[in-house]
Length: 468
Image 1: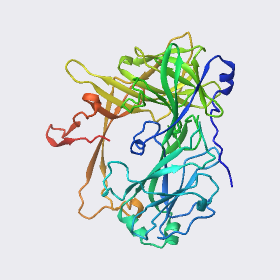
Image 2: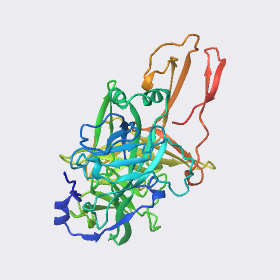
Image 3: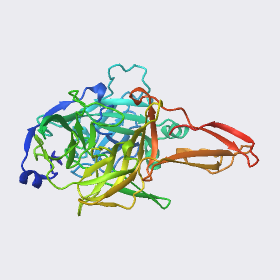
Image 4: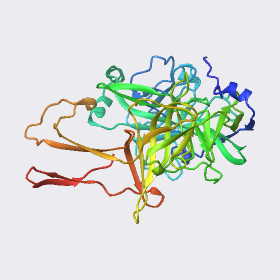
């Protein structure tokens, strides 16, 4: 059997040993089942479910329905992810009610526990069969971290379309040949570790969550790029999460600014002050100490006073791009010298009697890096003034074939459709797609309106644009 050994704190061990600081013992915590899917400690990991069996699968229990679905979720340090199988134990068409996750990574699903669907507190028995929670999924006894056995929960989503209904009636061997995507599985951590640190004269609760669900703590999310139709984009896969009790409530709470969940990184801002962070190799303690190295000041322009949060991609000297969330004060941030790109920003503003509005945006296109150094003027463009770009194009009316493929055929007698899109672009090229207002920023502003006017001034159509 291949063993996946939990490894923790590979981050900045040399720095932790050389600098003065204090090690704070970590306590293992579990998350109540009803709170797992909304917990702020990471988005979790996703995997497509198919009828085709993964090549790594060596052995499995006999499938009852013949319509089992398979996948490989996550990316572990032992190589590859965890094999999963979702099965209808009562026969075809009776509903998927069993899940097996190969947490020991030996390719054998017969020695892993069978996990049943769970009814979360408050969930109605008539919950849709298209979205099914499973759990708890507990790690093997030899996978102990900080004195506890990690536990996970899964949410299975089944795609419902005429194409998939057609393929669901095919024999398993035929469906496997088609490599049909029948759904997806989302894995979320049901555990984290935390401690109370004392640094810079301030006490604060800090935690670490296995945001990428791989039985490992200390994962830094590193950039990946992709190119589609000649356009290059980049993203950061799920990594681990640093939790901060910023409001002093005694727990880690979710808000729209994600104030208490930050990307795991060697730098953490507590009370606006930069600190160095490192996990002990055995994950039993967290070292937090004041950041003693030189920091560079960066002015966010042109309206830095409206920037509430900013997430930057940082490229240390000779290192890989990683995410950090510096504290914003008076439109400025203090960061280690290096190359930077804007990745995400959250704005908040209003004027006069108007209520405050919050906007969140991402920069998916990698821009030319900004070199930041200490003792010189550094600036980074983001936020307002915002530009609204509107495009309009005639869309073809098409017929949808199996698996959502587009035949490109025009239906007889169909009318052309004018597709209107609007994007809100910030000063750094970031695209804003989330807009909130009201108490706690829980409601959306009115939908934008549009009019289509002919050259002579006659209005031929009007309506509302939808968010998203």
